Length: 89
Image (cartoon, rainbow, N blue to C red; front, top):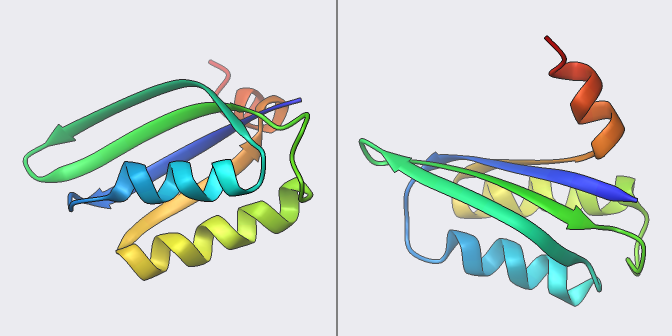
């Protein structure tokens, strides 16, 4: 099962490291990552493999939201199917 992680907010040092450390600590593999910074605003999208995750998706989604608040960004984790359904043209 794949998940999509999105991160939005003001750029600061360590955002990618903290998100990736959180995922690694839960045995989640990052398959693809894309990030941009536009006029000081950070935007990142990650495709992650949740098959070996040590926690359920819902628990990690809440944990990432809390981590995001702590570092000043908005972080969301969604199942790939939900993300695709929401972004279908």
